[in-house]
Image 1 (tube, rainbow, N blue to C red):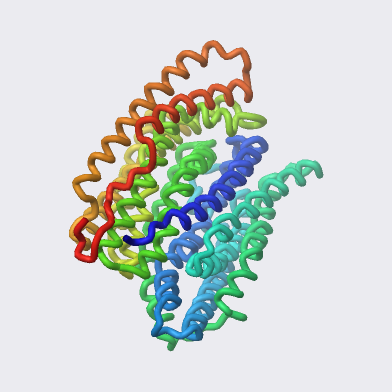
Image 2: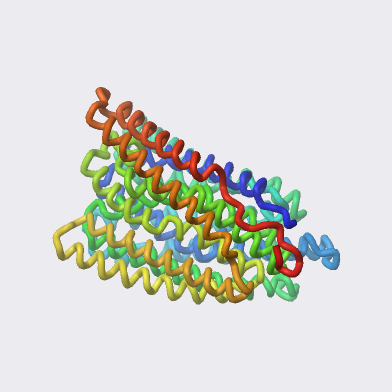
Amino acid sequence: MTDRPARPAAAVGSGILLSRVTGLVRDIAVAAFLGTQFAADAYWAAIKIPNIIRNLLGEGTLSASFVPVYSESLASADVSDEDARRLARSVLGGVAITALLLSALGVIFAPWITAVLLAASDEPTRDLTTRLVRILFPMSGVLIIGAWFLGVLTSHGRFFLPFAAPAVWNLSQVAGLLLATRLGSDRLAEALAWSALIGAVLQVGIQIPKALELSRVRSPGLEWSHEPVRRVARNALPVISSQGVLQFSSLVDIMLASLAGAGAMAALGYSQRLAYLPISLFGMSVAASALPAMSRDTNPAALRERLVNGWFQILFFVLPAALVLLLFGDLAVRLVYQRGEFGQDSTSLVSAVLAAYAVGLVAASSIKLFAAGFHALQDTATPMRVAIVSVAVGVATSLVLTIGMRRAGLGPYSAVGIALGSAVGSWTNLALLWFLLGRKLDRVFPPSALRSILRLGAAAAAAVVAASAVRWLLEPRLPWPGFVGSALLFGAVLTAGGIVYLGIARRPPSPVSPIGPDGSA
């Protein structure tokens, strides 16, 4: 029987939980001080724009290109420790040079970038966004370099630290907002951006000692003649192309949000934070912990077992989370964000966008795991082609829905069309990955998996009925307004639904029995 990724997944999940909880604290602070006003739109746009280069070259790219080759080098008796060190050193050098160059270009061309992407926004929003982008491009460069440390640590089986480190970045921003407010500054968005840059340096800094100790790298270099380095580069090109397609979708989202009107960009940002919480906790943790093990054992039977059991771990947690955000998202938004500058109108807008994102939550949480199956086989081209198709479908859907809703006079609520387009793209991506990976492995899911899916579906349906009944009974009768009432109501809804769900589903199902070398159960 192959090893299950439960402990690594738990370490990744614990680290991500810490970073996401502190991220939630940061978002609560941002919402309270900025609400959904123009400064919030500028902040969320400015965070997205530099993150384009981070997403092109950061954690996802190095996880798909560097981690499989480096993990293989560490596990192979035919590869010396010195060769593994040379590989790590060269990749660090290449990543550092690229990150510094792209960050500098971003700072220089920031006015032209924002002029194109925020053409439909007013001049104050564009000017503020430009100032923020010039601060945040260096932040993304630092975090790209930090992705190398994550790759090294996870390859050596150290999962908690790299995934918990973003907590420092989050807390730095909270401290920056509180300090700026205490000093009486009205330039809160700029203080937030500077504290994000400082937090990025701290986030990477705490990973440096352990990563350098494990890799035995003392300084960056670049040995292009070293064959594993060229293999990492070859593997990276399709991933970068794939990420480039996804970033095109992100650019379209920014332009459509500026067209939708004031508050739309902020609504997308706040709702994405809540929607991405289950994706990060369960989808990313399972995929990140499974990839090194998949890369060391690419036997089809072992890959099938890890994929199926990993996907059911994701489904067990993400399916109820998606239903909560779809049907009771207004309670979550009210509890988390509604205070200070974030009023009831902001709650209504953000919860509508959040419900649209929830439609694609199961698919979005599963994509990284299925893509990891291809990456373990060092096939990065297929996920790239799938990404191109799915992004084209998602962008077309977003354009049609958002422009149609805007013409119908829905204003910032047109951002719902952007979120629905993202959901359609996610389901397209997952369906294609599932089909193509099944062709590579003969099949992915055994017939017995259907019973587990039906059981989870029945449990989720029953939980929705129980949670809805509790809300219907309690909401009109709660004597406590504000935060206390929201917390009690949301807690009661989650408790009722959770008891019913766990009572029927019982535990994450493992639909695959131990599989022999010939693929038979």
